[in-house]
Amino acid sequence: SIMWNIFGRSIYVAHIALYPFIALFIYEILYIAITVFKSTAWGIFTTILVLADSTIFSSLMYIGTEVFVLSFSAIAIRGITTNNPMRKTIGLMLLGITSLRGMMLCAGLFLWDFSSTLFLRHNGRKCLFLKQFLYPYIIAAIPALSFVVWRLISKGWIISNPIAPWGD
Image: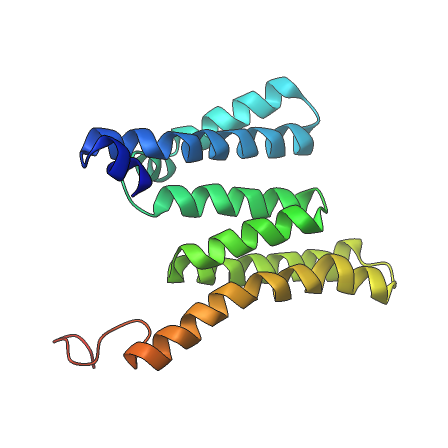
């Protein structure tokens, strides 16, 4: 909306406004792939394969929240895979305030991270488990839960308006 206020409302301006988030998604996927495969060539190849997926490619071209969901989930996934609690918190927080779909994706990332932390990385240190696993999710949940509570109090509903034909 900031870009529309400056340059006027048009589809062209909306597409240009999404380019930084598309670049962010590509950068995060490239970084994750290079980190996982420990090879720049395989990282670039994997990133091209990810971008060639028709669902991801069409989501990046669509003017909507999908670009933000992809970008912020890539930040959170990078935080999980590199064991960086700050990056994980920022990614999850941004993902949680994007949409209800983003909040559900946070829950899926929580389950994935919990299983990998519990079975693969956790070595008995409770403090490390709390600091690197639980705190990022608790902090990231605050803005999303605040929105849900505000929406319920102010509107009386969260997902679907009860007076709409599909409300029941």
